[in-house]
Image 1 (cartoon, rainbow, N blue to C red):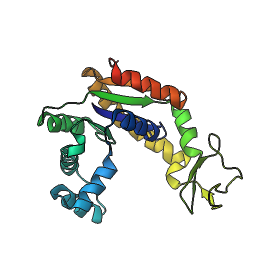
Image 2: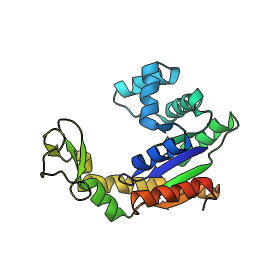
Image 3: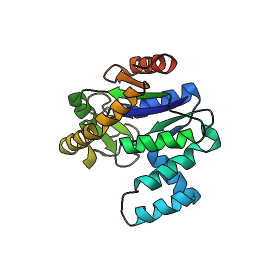
Image 4: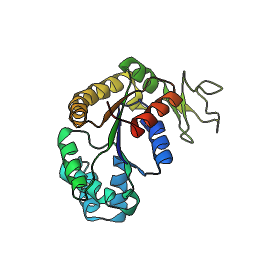
Length: 217
């Protein structure tokens, strides 16, 4: 099964991606991981990407498409994959369709975790990270025993700049602009499953299982 998972920051993609990859026995491929792997392995596309990254520039679509092609062509993806973070635009989605068509494959399901914006804000802005060990907490959903102190190592907990309310609102607005056309693209192809990501984790997981084993929307 070839699956895409989509969702705004704070939607819970990481948790659900781990469940999907484990249960269906397919690799979880994030754009960042694929990029780093290509650079580390020194592939043709990895070398191109490295040049852009060293100059502090965004990796262009044609290079990113090439990196995805390389990664999806590896042996562990023969039985399927879970792609996370790509595509982000309709042109990238069209490029992905072309990449998969080269080997007679296609996207089987697109799992979209839909969460109300106010809840997303609460989830992300309440996140706290330990400066020492990197452990993650949440002021409401997963608080430490002592406010501001890591349970594991006693380190100081802090809020990342990317998790501030102003920054998160901007990220969500940008995400909405790019995502709406992409959702329409996959809905027209009959592979989109909209999942209510505001439900408890176990219920979201069960809804995803039904989506992957049954019909899309």
